Length: 397
Image (cartoon, rainbow, N blue to C red; front, side, top):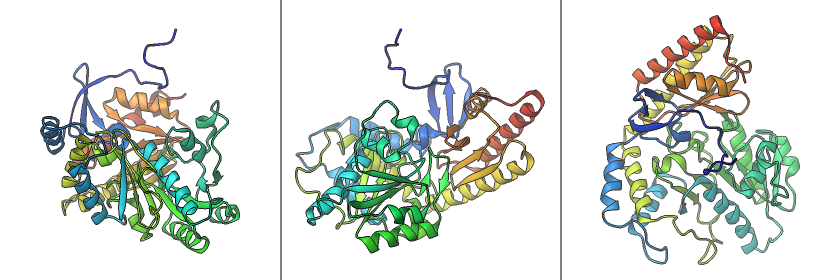
């Protein structure tokens, strides 16, 4: 018999009642060190006072109005994000999936308005994740996402991740752009090199294409810069953002240059809840913290420390850890001989919350407020777990 709540999640049998900073507390009062942060969402940790105050203040004034009226907090958030990034303009959404939809429409409308109606296809990368809409799963092309939902929307050509020659071979008269994650999250914490990022930019420039970067998971400070592509000095045409942009409140954005967004005029796109006053107040509160001069440099330092500690962990437990992956506070341990879901359940029982990713990777996306003591605590839990597995058997399944 089906449950009242649609059973689309393989839920771990634990429920949390409250959170504070880096920790979640379950119904029994047990404390868990959170290295998942709601799939990279809780960038400032749980119940950050700046965000709590912003929600309380705005909730007492105005929650929602239609986008047919001006929303001053939205104007302010857009101006601040534009000043801090490559973008000239942006559209606010409720989620990353909606931001991806906006980006796809923007690419098509850009070429349509230039008299190139046939240039509608996007080249995408294998093992990508671009949300759960039909267009999003078609763009990713993974069977585990698409099976049973055919026929899929047309317009996406999937090539191996980072294979520049395959990208070149796919460019044709119908190609309108290239869409890629600078660091794949669901696909196994796999960064795209600076050289390959530049190669994609060059291909777009040579062929009149738009470069779309999906930074829903790797953006908003996770690598020590506001957006991950900033490490490569490549300027994109369109970037999708979500997760950390709202610090736990449903919020996403599609950011673009003026040229890329030139076709998105009145009536071409919309969202009932997107950019509402409550979401905009929280988004501005997140930026209040994230744009402090010391915030991102500290994230970089903690990211470097985490990567170093994970490297040392691999040296101690190479029988379990084949590879350490990631950039900054977006990290993964490839453990091909371990059942990653079973491993996560084991860690939850130990009071530690990681997640799984593709390619048999244990994924870590801790809140950006992490400090050295939290990294030390995580390494102690890892050491104890691996020692136990060595004695009593490895989690499987």
